Each structure stands twice: as C-alpha cells, then as structure tokens.
Length: 191
Ligand SMILES: C[S@@+](CC[C@H](N)C(=O)[O-])C[C@H]1O[C@@H](n2cnc3c(N)ncnc32)[C@H](O)[C@@H]1O
Image (cartoon, rainbow, N blue to C red; front, side, top):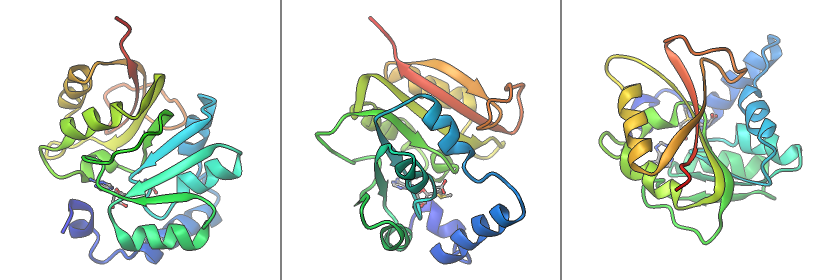
C-alpha cells in the first residue's frame, strides 16, 4: 500500500482521468504543467510519478521524447492503454535505475507529497543521477503543516547538489509569495 493508493481508495485510475476531463470541459487549461516543462525546451523528459499519463502524453504530442515512471500498476495501465507508443515503466522513484539521462525530470501532480515519508531525500538523490549536466528537476506540490515542508525540500535538494533555478506559485509562473502550492525548478550546482 503506497501513500497515493491509501489516499485514493475511492479514486480509481479512470475516475482520476474523468476528473481532469471534466475540468478541461469546463474551460480549464489542464496542460499548465506541460506548458512550463515545454518552455525549458527539453529533448528528453522523465515524467516521474506519471499516473495515467496526462502530462507525458501531452509532451509526446508536442514532439518531446518522454518516459513515464510510476509504481501504481492501475494508473500505468490506463496510461499504456491511451498511449502505447510511449515508454511506461513500473518502478519506485526511490530506486528507479536507467542508463538514460534526461534534460528534465518532472514530478507534477503532488508526487513529492505522495512519496513514502522519509524517502523524499533518497528519491531526489536517485533522480539527480538520471539528469544531464544541465538538467532540471521540476516539482509542484501542495504545502501544508502535515506534509513535506518547503524548507526540508530545499535542504534535501541542496544535499543532492542542486540549486534553485526558479520558484513559482503556479505552473503559469505566478510569483511565489508563500502561497499553499509551490513549483520549483532546480539544477545541478556548478563546481
Ligand atoms: C496525484 S498522482 C499524479 C499523477 C500525474 N503526475 C499527474 O499530474 O497527473 C500521484 C502519482 O504519484 C505516484 N507515486 C507516488 N509515489 C511514487 C513512487 N515512490 N514511485 C513512483 N510513483 C509514485 C502515484 O502512484 C500516482 O500515480
């Protein structure tokens, strides 16, 4: 049982997708994450904690080479059914290994706060190994008193050799002023 599946007992992979579909139908841009990721002009992206593939599929549609990684079989099956041409990998981000190097690794959709508690630093450390030298680690997550604290996240990133390259309150680059959602871009600190 993962933190994600514990919290989403009532939210199956298809109802997760339905929720996004409804938002789109009501006029919301459901590709804000893909827009920001795409603005970095990456060639190869890892959608880490890709779920049902919302972000990876949109990036692939825009011509970006993308790999989706998730540990939830049901979410991944939905992604695979929708876009069999994309590489979908069943793995835990804390131990995911690949010979590939990505220009950008993205964890949209609160993935950071669905990791098992106390594995956040290990996970960042592991993902950093999969970045190119100029690569970007991009995350977006809700801030609350009971989940991962921003100070802790920044400290974990620093310990993994990263420095902050951008911070916003939304995927549309609204300025971060201590709001309850944070989008962060980190890159490897130059020696
Ligand atoms: C809220 S969903 C977000 C899905 C997708 N990123 C999106 O924005 O639509 C969180 C996802 O993180 C995945 N996840 C949580 N912990 C994980 C881990 N340790 N390794 C891989 N995936 C993980 C869950 O399985 C779930 O699919």
